[in-house]
Length: 237
Image (cartoon, rainbow, N blue to C red; front, side, top):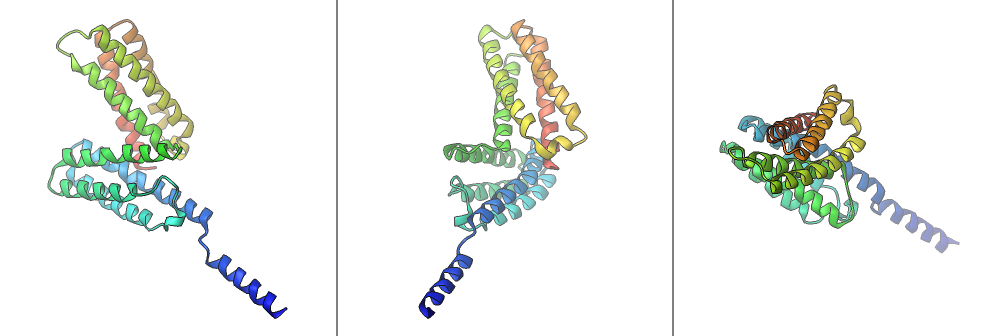
């Protein structure tokens, strides 16, 4: 009887000492999500050439990322391996470049982070809201770059086809963003942003189909402007 009691005590003690995987995983997700607001804020300020603002946001981002790295290995999801340290190095590089008033360099360091996160999660079969934002950004950059590429000569059939492909990708990612934005949709600026983004995407579809160069370029720039408004909302989320 005494031996059985001792065994029960040991089992109970071991259960208390064992890592609480579910709780730790929840803590990881919460900390990862908390890192994204200063990340988007730093993206926005660095894109605007605001080195001082970038430094402020990157300092907050670095602190939150360090907190994220503090989650025990047992409490991390499968995708969060060495990528956390790689991203920490990029955050520090962005801070150093912002301190040197190299906003372009800081922005480039920060931009690389989102693809690292998305690709690591995709490899593990995980998809998040922020991955949809990354896909949307990539499609937006590709279509706006193509629309403005030949602004001194007429866009050709290949240009319009390439833009249409990226408009379709942007629209799919935007629909995903709309369906999973959560608290961000409570922002006062969200309804106007949503309507204007839908309008720009619709105009791009019709303008590229009609091969209307002027309308295509105007709509592409409108979509780009709305993207920065999206970043501003996410920076405060």
